[in-house]
Image (cartoon, rainbow, N blue to C red; front, side):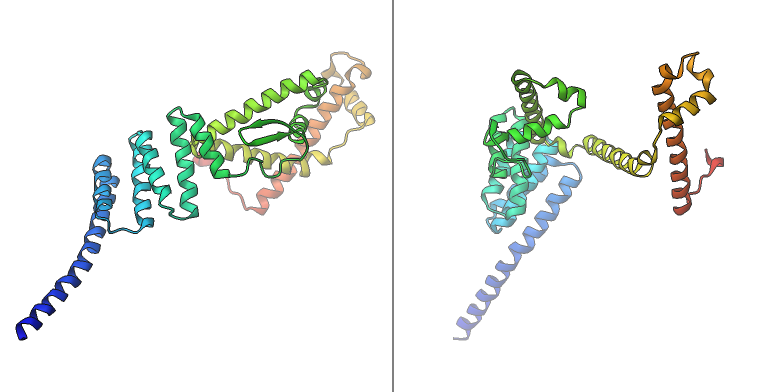
Length: 293
């Protein structure tokens, strides 16, 4: 009887250990796989991820995460977009959660586009966005469609309104509007293609966007703090003309009025700009170390 009890206890101990050991082993295997990837042993890292997946001991979410990691190696490190897409798809089918599913969809779009499968990329993108219309798009008649997304007359007119005034005046007939619509669609298609390729995450693009954003912000503050304060009347221009007659090559005031106004505007703008910068430099306690140049 004692022998039976001891055997039962030994069985329970072994069973308990067998439950714990695989978990510990999997943690070590994952640590090893991550180390392989960190040391640029990419094929070996993927093989180790596969060994972990083959144990069958992982939850759906953890399995999805490992397939996602393997997919990222195929995509970003090995340039193997077909295998990357397969891993991303497998991870997505595991339903790992909304946030990761969205990331996986975008990764699939990038891979399909890299493989030259623009139709599949667009289909996946439409699945992800689910609704065809851009948020905030003006309503009105639909004048064209890109897949499921409609381009409305209001959206087209908004695009025209952003053109310089002389260009807006040129779009004065149905044929001209049709030509602009085709150009607009072309721009949207190129934009969509760039998104599918993941160029919105490209470091150079992000740096360029940051530069453009900075310039727009600077122009906004200059408009508010400098340009809006400048007003040059004909009388002002005439006084400037009389004081700087040698700058106008013996032209009469009538001939030189516009140029005189422009020069005076530039002069006053520079004065306001200098005042603004001086005020900001004082407020921000700016220091310039000329000896370090």
